[in-house]
Image 1 (cartoon, rainbow, N blue to C red):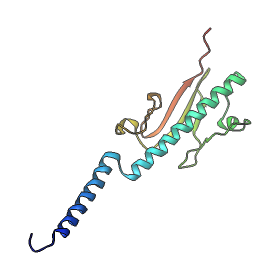
Image 2 (image 1 turned 180 degrees about the horizontal axis):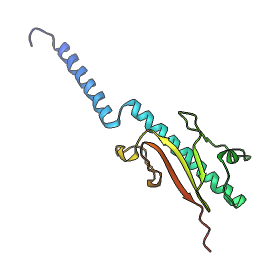
Image 3 (image 1 turned 120 degrees about the vertical axis):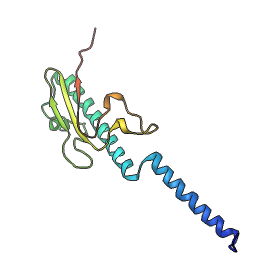
Image 4 (image 1 turned 180 degrees about the vertical axis):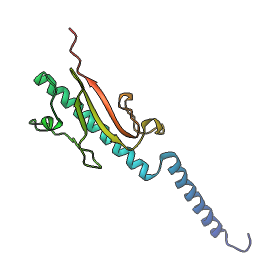
Length: 143
């Protein structure tokens, strides 16, 4: 072996294996920065889910949609994250006519481009990168 001890070759081989494993993990899972963007987007969706539930509860109590997110956040016992976790800007909310409303956020990733095996997300919360609005309607209970 060219005069080098076997231990040196094993050490070099082990180093190559470690580098290849780390590179493979980054290819499969995405870079740490991409993982962070995905986690922040998942947090945005979780925040919007809570806001949607709070709007529905408000509507059930008041028989009307709230005028703003501040009205929701001011209700006793309601703790909402109504601001983007990264930028601090408020999520978008608007009445969309009748008993319909929109919730908007700006996302860093596209759910269609995510690799399988990650955090599962309902199709109704699918979004592209950039600003995206979700439309909801308050359905009257059927008797």
